[in-house]
Length: 167
Image (cartoon, rainbow, N blue to C red; front, side, top):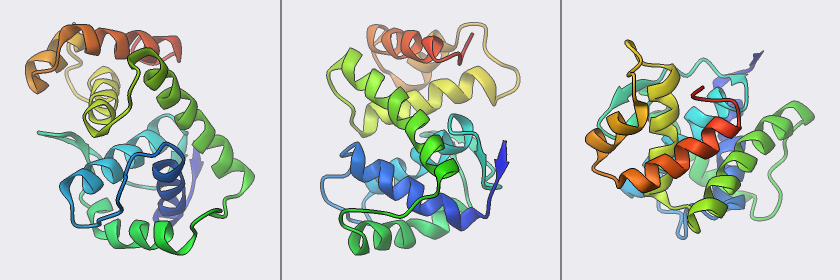
């Protein structure tokens, strides 16, 4: 895992939010914006393989980092100040591409990628790898915790499995 300063996570998070069209309006105070920042931050560390030293815990909305909550405004500034091109180096671009490819695959299978689905993806991955004890059936566990349809969670699980996660 490549170790970087926490603040380097912010341009990557902003670029993924923009490239995946995950925030129609960039309102740094909206709950949806905060959820998107948290889940993308988790996925960049977990799937992207970059260690920003962000510690995530399980809360009602899935993976959550207390330290990342201090950077909503900065992510918002990246979205506002770099409308077309947010500068990233090769390692960061590669990590971003891994996350983007996974989420695009989920979007393709489900026909949609919104805040609720992003939350389900990050939550499922966390249930498979970052909680103790790891549930025997992470799909069923997520259905119970989130009230999502089993069909949607199973489709997400199958995509995640194809990427070598939740095996």
